[in-house]
Structure formats: structure tokens, C-alpha cells
Image (cartoon, rainbow over all chains, first blue to last red; front, side):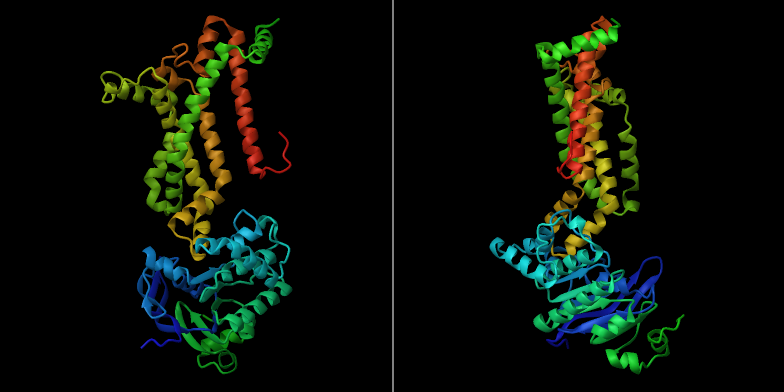
Length: 246
Length: 234
């Protein structure tokens, strides 16, 4: 039975390119939590996020969003997509103003124009970019661009936000700002976050649950502190203690 | 005075006095090439966008075809269209031969592969990322496609200008299907050929200068557009 608290569930999910890169039997994400997906390079973390965001079809298996099987195409897929979004490691900002970037998702949802600008201003203040509304998005630094991407993603208040290495290559002050934003949003709105990160310290700082992926399989899942202090699998232990795993 | 300098001097006179013969030719050239490029844009940009968003492996054949047609010799295009629209051809009944309409068709055939092909290349380089960003933000199919085109606008505009440059300067196809009839199908390039043959160098040079001037204006517009319309001098 899928309970009310489950926002996303996958069953027998696999993805094959030249070889199988992901194979998950069954896993559920609970509403309102922050998940950290960790694992070495090539573990299938980003592929997992792309499947969850319906950017790619799985080779086999099903995804359930709020208890309903998700279709890859048509209006049903669009409806699901409009309840979730994704922030990429290197976000693409559109060649327009910061304000237009943040408002993009709202326009796609035909949000009332008179309220759009107000929301954009609030969000820009929240991400520390007050006064940036009319700036050309192409002139922003990496950290500023990532903050605009985050503001753009949360503008339409999605139920689920997928983050693919959201702070990779950013300086510590931007990392701290983005992490604080994620925690604030989670606390204030109950938004669910699934964050892929190679930074185990970051996962430990902000995730409530950690999923350890290795060679396309979930090796271990658990509450963050438990995963870091008392991992059950030797590979997890090696990874969180910074040793090479094969 | 050498013929070239004399031609340039006379050319300026014809241009500055808006010589009616010259103006009629220039106007028809712009009308024919402008219409052909507009039609090619309407077909080529969506086609190039569609192909650019498909995985390269699935469009290999059509890509090769487009690249080949980008280098289609105008006389070959003219010959094929001539055969199709002459009395013995399948479209002969339309009676379009020796009219501006068939010149537009010929130039459409020449410009379309360039606009579609260059659009495809532009979209292929960044289109997938733009498409995925739009989709993750909840855009529907139409808004996603529009976003991809809008974000690639500089490259697409470059494709359109390249297409216009190709057709406004070509002579083979319009000569074959238009016939270079004075006051009816005579355009700048065919007129230059004719006037040079007749020894009217001043008119030929004048037309050449107008062609260059048009090319300069188009490229200046492109440059200004690519600079975002800010602080760019002509």
C-alpha cells in the first residue's frame, strides 16, 4: 500500500545505455524530507534523478508520483512535471533578465501577471539577489546563477525538488547560502528534496535520509547520522570514511 | 578614366538620383529574395529545430542530404525547376515559367537547406540543454519549442542572413527560370550580367554597389542583433 506520506516511488526501475547503469527493485521517497543520494562517480546518481524527473524513460520499471503510475508522454507527464522540478549542476539561464528567468515556470503555469513580479522580487530577496531583477542573466557569476536557478525552480512551489550537485564548483559562502535556502524551504513549505551530491559532508549537513548508490544499485539507506556513524555495509563504511571503493 | 572608376562615378549618380530602371531592378530583387527567404525561414527553422533536437544517429541520412543541398549549384536547381515547370513538366500547366513566382520557388529551394541545416547545427549544440531546462520548469511542447528557438535566436538569425546572402547574390537559377525579362523578371545579378555584356559598365557597377550595400546593411543588422542592440556602431 502506498501511504499518503509517500510522494515518489520506483519499482523494478532500470536503465540501460551500452550497459546497465541503474537497477533498483523498490524504493519510496517520503513527502517533506530531504534526501541525499551519495555514491562514487558512475554509481548512477544523475541517471536516477533524470529518470525521476521524466527526462529519460526507464528501460524497465515504473515510477509512481503521489501513488499514481507516471506516464512519460502527454498531458499526464506534463501534469507530473509541473509538480516537480530539477536544478542542474551547471544551470542554464535563459538569455534574458534575471526576473524573466525566475518568472519562467510561473508563466508556463499561467500565473497571474500582477502577482508574478511580486513573487519574483520576494524570491530574489530570499536568495540574496535583491536588486538583480533587471540584470542580464548572462552577466551573473556562477554562484549568482545557481541562486537564480534555485529561485526559478521554487517560484512555482513544486512538491518535489531534485538537485543534481547544486553546489559543485561554488565557493563556500555560496554553498552555505544554498544549503540554508534548502533547509529553510523544507522547513517553511514542506517541500521534498532529493539531492545528488558527491560531497558527503554536505549530505551529512542537510540530508535527513541518505541513499548510498554503488554500481547502479542501492547499497544502503538510512537516517543520515546512522549511515555516517554506523553503516551496515562495508562499502558504505569505506565510502563515508573516504576510502576508495571498487 | 579607367572603366571601373568611371563606372563607380556613374553608379553613384544613378543611385543618388534614384534611377527608375535601377530602382525597379533593386526592388524586384528584394521582393523575390525577401519572399523566398521568408518562406524558407517559415519551413526551415521549425524543420531545423525538429532535426536538431533528435539524436544525431536518427537523422544521419537527412543531415547528409541537407549538407549536400546546402552546396547545391544554383544552375542545377534552376535546371530541375525549369524541367518541372516547363510545358513538358508536371507543373507546366501552372504557367509559372518566366514569372517572379518561379524565381521565388528557385530561391526557396536554394535557401531552405541553408536555413534548415544551420538551424539544425545551432540547435544540436545547445538545444537539448535548453529543452530539458524548459521541461523541468513545466513548459508544454509549444512553449518548450519556442524557448529553444528563442534561446538560439542569434544563430538562427545568422542562418537566415546566410540564406539571404546566398539567394540575393545568385544568378544561375533566376536566369534559367526567370529569363531576365526587362521590367518583369530582371533582378540585380541577371542585370549585371546583361549590362556587362552590353558594355554598360556604369549600370553594372551601380547594381554591384547596391548589392554590396544591401549585404553591408544585412550584416550590420546581424552584428547589431548579436550584440544585443546595445552600444554597437554601424
